[in-house]
Length: 306
Length: 224
Image (cartoon, rainbow over all chains, first blue to last red; front, side, top):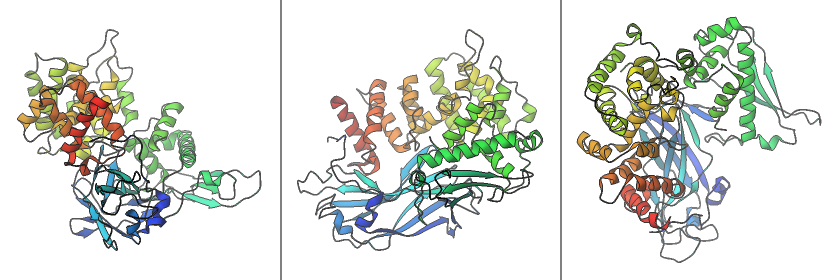
């Protein structure tokens, strides 16, 4: 069996959702038989009342393809009329050091693809940090048709639908305050940073005390724009990652400038949900090194994978 | 199993310039950490004659199956946590790490193998090496490791990729080391070939599943 180095067939991308009529119905999280509270916040699902050391986790995604027949014939075909395709939840977790797939749903040209469900199971004590889930379509069995557009190798992955679903198993239900404003003035910057607190060990990490403000009227707004989607995490643009990096760097610089409160922060004295608590979490879970500016910047950039 | 965590900043303060091993204060260790030290003492006593990869393979087996075993309460979650490995390497077992990675001629300890570079931390590398080589039984795993080398550790463990290890795929590739005609050199080439092909094909859904996928990788070596 040979391989190809470049995909010779159409790749299903984020913009193809509409073409195949892919829609996500529900995303549910269970631990044993108990359904978990997982409200999406800032592009990620934070599991509440969940202990990743002791609790197993099941994720179920209900989806539909309104025009799944387009996979098999027509301009958008990728498999051919006799092909058998599959869709499964692919997962990866850099922080857990592992990746894998859930059980697939297999479908053919005449399959009804309304309200189908794909799932993935995680044993207790196996996850750490964040997990990204992506529904991906792949080839199960090729069609006998000879068309260069059609994949021939079982297991060939055509692409993911959406930018991925980010699930955090270790974070408290805090949020990263980002807001938008509109200032079309040519001199108005793309973004500004608001930092105003009196005691970081007590003041909550909320927009009153810390906020990144993005100018939606700026000519470069598209470079930092995240397309909102209730159930999926859009990919974070690199330019926005740079803004997050700079903002967190500014946060830590200001915190370190106050030796008394900084001492409390590194000892974990911040009350839960406070600015100091967030900083302590980054220092301990992220292992950020604040001894020098280059090392801190490198650790923050590593957090955002840039 | 209760093992503490050590953040990078504190670790750096403890480590200093790396001219001497951090002192071990057994009074500050948890009961489980004390047991880990005792198990290491027993294990290393039988490894006195071993060095280099033979020591690596023996320690890997003991770590995975006895000292930090799932049955004993160690978890994948802990194994993925660099703060746990920093604690073990720098505050619980630094003297045992030094058996393999002692000070160089200039008197400086190789910090990379203790805590500085997460993918090179010796204890972590060995635990994951064994996990990614695991076969049905301890004896079968041992047999696979006997065919390995320090190059195999690097090829399998030090390049997990952005999204983490594909555990079953690694185990299948490592299993091939016991097959006639398959060498560590081939394993390294297979791992490299895999990094390009796995972008296009999901091994679990390949014809014949993961074994079929590995067969195709090996078959593709002659064309690579």
